[in-house]
Amino acid sequence: MIKFIVLDVDGTITDQNRILNPEAISCIRKGVEKGIHFSLVSGNVIPVMYGLKTFLGINGPVFGENGGIMYYNDKIEKFFDKTRPFSFLEYISKKSSVKPYFTNQWRETSAAFSMNSEDENIVRKEAEKWRLEIVDSKFTWHIMNQKQNKGYALGILMKMFNLQWDEILVIGDSDNDDAMFKLPVKKASPFNATDSIKSMSDYVSDKSYGYEIRDVMNKFNLL
Ligand code: CA
Image (cartoon, rainbow, N blue to C red; front, side, top):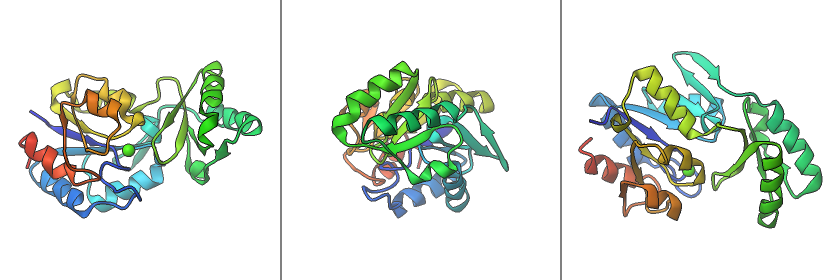
């Protein structure tokens, strides 16, 4: 039985322009009233995740920076450090089109950037040398520590709530969701998801950008 629904934010409960889908919010509210727990796991910064949790009434922990940091019960917990991601950002900015992203002022465990797509291979190789991970959320690029990903966040959640794999349903759409889609949890994706995410999903909705939430919750008998 599903006890926890873990949602990505951008492109999963929002549209292409990151506007929240009111129908997705209404489904989350219905789920909460039925006693289902929700968590958000995003590449975004923890002040934004705190805002989303508060204003959407998310009843579980929320994770920012792809699992590097968590807000729950008026406490923020950091699982990684930002020193090396920020040093790498400074280094690679001088050698490529990489430009720091303005949300870095609120980042505590990772760094975000934009770049010209032809630099992807160079930046990826350099990150490997530094033993750091880079990932594309479709909205921005992220530099993270090794093992820092949404799968790590799921591990924290399982320990906190003593959950089994099949008690968790994850919904996501892009490459930074890969790590949680590789775990033996239940997985669903919107139609706008990447081919890789779709291929790992137990269920792919024919709806996109937040409209899949009702469809997925119906499919798993959660509404
Ligand atoms: Ca996403």
